[in-house]
Image (tube, rainbow, N blue to C red):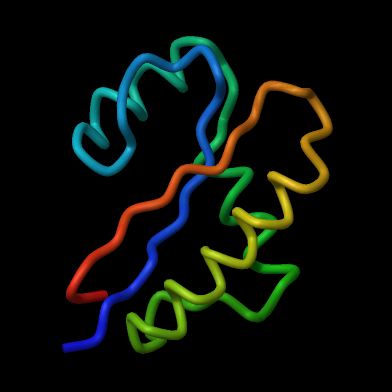
Length: 89
């Protein structure tokens, strides 16, 4: 069985795990006015034409690449890459 690595960006100070507690992670991020989810999608659109109608594998690949790019640039110094191994996309 194939394993997949999912990637996400979070800030160093966000106490919530975006994989396990996405809504809490998002609420905290929005309260702090980081806008990380919107940032991920803006970068993903520059990596490739992100479209909600795309197959999940393509969408996940674009999001993974966007998260890697954000982690490399880390313009604010607050972002970190988090990963999770999964059996499905």
